[in-house]
Length: 183
Image 1 (cartoon, rainbow, N blue to C red):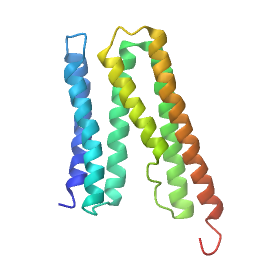
Image 2 (image 1 turned 180 degrees about the vertical axis):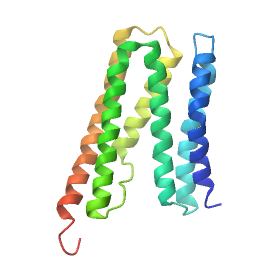
Image 3 (image 1 turned 90 degrees about the horizontal axis):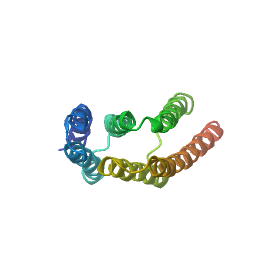
Image 4 (image 1 turned 135 degrees about the horizontal axis):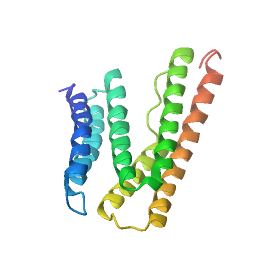
């Protein structure tokens, strides 16, 4: 049972190409099948985290698979939406830069400070949830005027940047304290 959270994370990763196919396959104005897959992926994210804590099955592999599944799905969704609305390409770039910075920070922190990867915090989870809601909204209501789509994505990006600043602050603090005795 302790591998169940990792199996769920792998399942979520496998849903990414299925989402992309369904997004472009669906002939309706509403991307119903893609939305359903995105919803299942979101629920599986909640479930694997809950099970990992409940079963005391948190692992190094799980700490990699869970965010990997989240990021792959988020990028797939954003890229699909951006193909429909090219005006949102800047949002994909901002999120990509954020993820690259977090990845580099995590690697540096792990190598230099011998510290574990930082768990998601409230700001990170909130920005992920807001992105989920915004993406669902843009898929459900494809005729939303561009100015509203930009406003929605901008709100999600602002939260993402606030979360990034929070993580950077934690990274800097850990790096400052890495050589101090007793910490």
